[in-house]
Length: 129
Image (cartoon, rainbow, N blue to C red; front, side):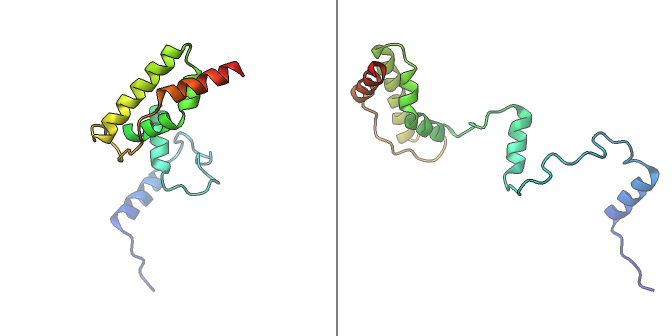
């Protein structure tokens, strides 16, 4: 007769089951929340962000800045005046300057300064059309 090895942890789990310590736990009989989904190696980060109520846009400052520069058109379209567009681009250019100098956390940013005149021209043409 072969003896079966049972680790200390396995023994404790078995004893707890025999004592009924796992009976009537919250969620008993319901499937796991991610049952049937493909494996995602970042599941724990996404789950933590969801539980903590952090938006999925939680990015390092330099990556958030890159995204903001990429979405410049949509952002300036929400501005009410040409002065607001210029102020927005000036603020963004100042952040880009800080990022290029290494004063913001995250991967390096090598984006050139944005042209406020070009942003204003685009803002005007989209408002007119």
